[in-house]
Length: 551
Image (cartoon, rainbow, N blue to C red; front, side):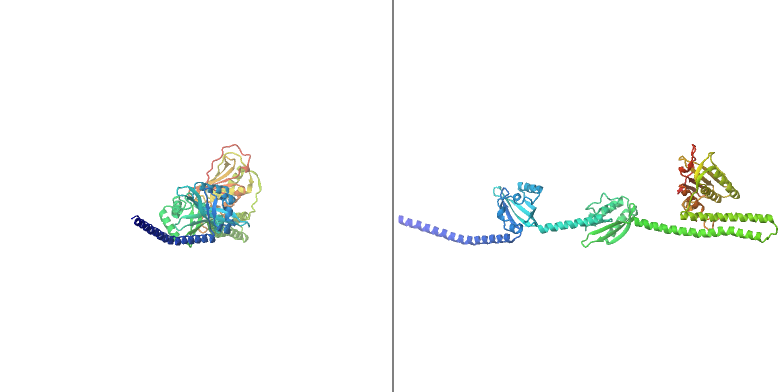
């Protein structure tokens, strides 16, 4: 009985052992291919690491290298075995500056990932190579820090390309900054991306908003709201809409006024959809154009004035010459027999005509000297009182002939002036003659002289004549200018008197002021500089009415 039981036990043990053997055999057949595959994958990975320009590395918890792939030697000439057991600072102490190494070690102390750490290595032949390091911290299942594992790569070509791009950009920005015109670049969303100092200078009224990223519409709206664009005043929204529509049609070019400047704005769309805008200050060009137009207008005015002058001179010269010739013929041929009284009267007419003709010629000679810059003064000291009285006596006959009341009205003071007496006399005579000429019968002409609060001697001639329109106050001081048209005028004259008067005054460094209203009369004041006053008396200065200054 016992023998049978042992048999069955032995049988069951044998069957169990056979089952285990079969299981182990099946298991072995399964693991062997897996192990072979794992070895193949590992060999493949090692091959990739070997031929790759990148290298892999591992560090322990003290940041000492425990593994470095062979690729490191191919890139930097460092033997991997040399790196084992050393930290990055020990291997390449000069690859990072002090601050960069400190920042890197702070990351490691926090067990933070390392990203894009750039280092500089100098090879044995002096060549500089740049590398970039990435790494992640490694922890065990319990969370204990084991070290770092990562990769490195050669980025020398990238660094040099970045450096070249930076240098190119620097040169580009320097070139833009050096330009005198304003330059700005706007992206596809019409936002400002780049501009130079000149553009900011020309952005009057919107300087505070002009910055990178601002929309063009916001920039131009700020300009309009500041009131620096005259053509937009009162029609702001319409002007902005027109300007934005114009911008969409680039390339365009237009001129505009911004503040006190004329600008020429040109816009060009680039191939990538950006917009290049150049702004040029053309204020000087506009001013030259305006000056040229004024010069042309002045030339036309001068030409017309000279033509009128020729017409006037034709009359002014022929009248006395005809009188001289006519009366002298009567006397020469004794047409009236022995009528000596009549001949004497004709001789007086001849003398008057000759005197008038001489005055015309003297005026022309004076103008010639003035235009040629050859006006010379013979200065001396003389009494203003005596000169004014002398001029009044000389012109009184002419005033009486026109029934004009001429008088000298001045305080009882003695004034002496250091100047060219003949020139000052001509100034007075010209002013008074003009006043008499343009004052109707029954009117008044007054001659005054005195001294102002600055001790300057002043000569004043006033009348109750026809007056001068405000827009002609400056014109009457030009040569050959007259208040009336040469063909319709009612008063004689060449139009040179006031021009000569102004130049004689300026030759003495003096100033002439004119104040006049049509129908009310005219006041002309000539003021000489204080250094021409001889021993100025202590008196209350005269008060004279002042008009527009000429000279």
